Image (tube, rainbow, N blue to C red; front, top):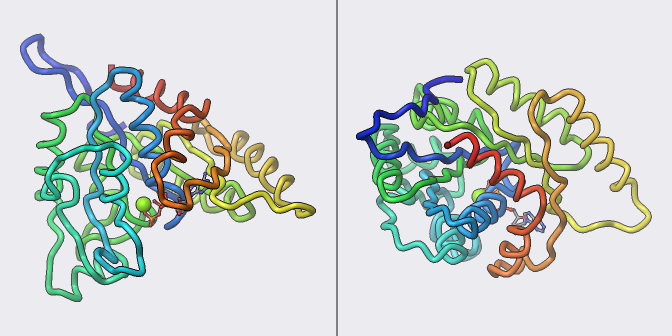
Length: 257
Ligand SMILES: Nc1ncnc2c1ncn2[C@@H]1O[C@H](COP(=O)(O)OP(=O)(O)OP(=O)(O)O)[C@@H](O)[C@H]1O
Ligand SMILES: [Mg+2]
């Protein structure tokens, strides 16, 4: 475990608990899982802040609401963008490419400062990555460097379908090489059930193999919730009651206590 000590002197405020939500890929359900987790923690009386430090494709009408906007809508938080989403790039590219396109340089210091502002306000701060784990942020740093900088444990969201085993194990190995604590691997099902297909068997065997091989608590598979794709907040509220999300909230609370 790197930099995750939570010891505090009797005079210092309680260290915030939280996590960094990363994914095996883009579009696997990081925002949805993070929003549901935030609602679940809040229902338990924990004050929760959320952050999406680097947004790309920001403001494009075809892209729909940004992750920051979706999180705001679900959680009704009013923190300024400077804290919640310090970097917003219009280009729908990987963060470093989008930053380069406008001559910007992403600063981990600036992100850490924004995180610190939220950590001073909330008991728990949840941070969403962008894309997957090895996505570069600067000429030198990738998402793992940001995770280490924020000293947060990771929740990895993966797809519970064919290909999910390889993607999850590769990502976990990349975390292990940096000794980053993984609280859980959450398997999500962002696609509807297809009748007369191999999808159910593929899902069950993905869960089984990852339970055997991942070395991390495997949660889910979360259910497919059709209303999530409509972008409303009802689907997230429904998911916030799922046993997998409840267990995730237990793990976050236990780690932060
Ligand atoms: N369990 C689910 N049931 C139904 N739809 C889902 C589920 N999980 C995610 N989705 C839908 O899949 C899409 C991708 O989810 P989401 O935006 O959370 O992924 P992401 O990993 O945060 O993507 P990005 O890399 O762009 O940040 C969204 O339209 C979301 O509503
Ligand atoms: Mg997202």
